[in-house]
Image 1 (cartoon, rainbow, N blue to C red):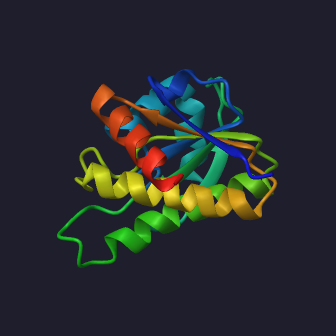
Image 2 (cartoon, rainbow, N blue to C red):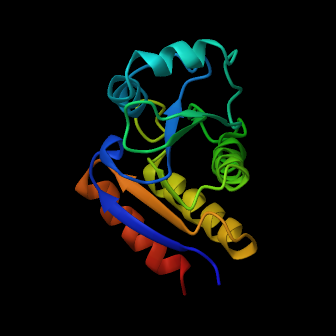
Length: 172
């Protein structure tokens, strides 16, 4: 039986799940938005650990301990910066979700929470990013036992509404 997907509005840094996903930049050394919030909540140990990883290319993923977060693990994945849709942005975003889920599975993660990767300062259109996120999660869950639950954590009511509408449409 495939895992389940849920949508919630809130702060990803407060969730007691096995892993949260960080919409990181390629340096993995913190930044704004979700990335900065995760680094602040995890404490300076996260930055020190990330310094040992040598960064991460866009679309790939690396895992670290959660340190002071309720989540045991943080999976860092640099999302693409939206330019115009003609520079592999969609394929790179899909790769973020696939690689994060594969890393979670390899680590034995049962529950994972994703932010809306690349939809903030990176400018990826929310509706298209949401469709990619849900489609990739559905595909992965259909063929794998872990993770058992994927949670999409939305920072705003509008984002949550788009996720709910997209999930309803794609579930048909």
